[in-house]
Image (cartoon, rainbow, N blue to C red; front, side, top):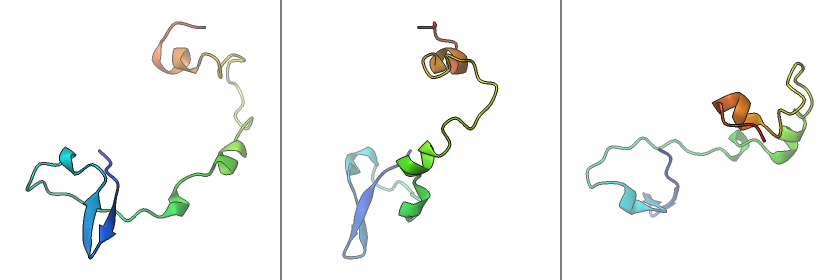
Length: 70
């Protein structure tokens, strides 16, 4: 589970605090915005994989999860 929030006066205030029961232990990992891939960096990968079916984009759920083809 991933929860997001902000630090106010040294305390983490979660966007949805109702999701945590009182006394729940948490581990806080500070988000580094450079960890998130940008749309541009994802586009750089487009077309770099060989051997995929020609309809992979349209039917990725079929190939990954066995859903019916479109």
